[in-house]
Length: 163
Image (tube, rainbow, N blue to C red; front, side, top):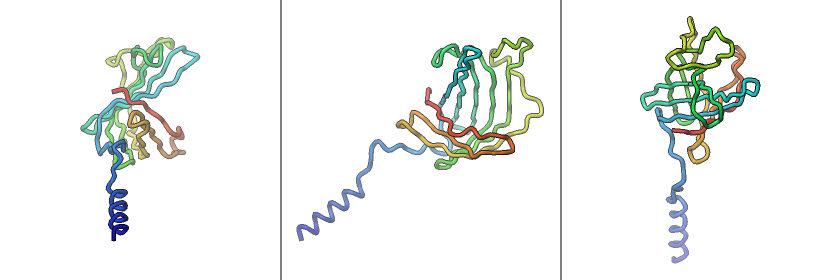
């Protein structure tokens, strides 16, 4: 009888334990700023691609320029505005407004956000892919399936949480 009681308690404890380090799902809407960057050797600058998720479902995709990977933004090269939803790990974003930095000087790669120009007759873009939290929630990995029509086969994009 003692062995049976011990076996029941051991079995119950195995199923009732909860891992305190387990990540909580982000939910339908969450907030935070995530960045990934790449160095453009020919220009000697860093392009920083930021995703700004708002609690209300709004999304900003910013492309800013920096002299160093983690330095201050010098200005904007582009901006996309839209909305997003996250269902478990399925991320859908609808991108509706597209802005870019337009300068007559080809050496001028960026400017203030207020100087961005709307892309006329831009077609809204809707994409659905997967979002995975990594590094205890400090990073997210986003993957969208290849789309031959728009030639968007970027692969996995990893962003680091900065805010």
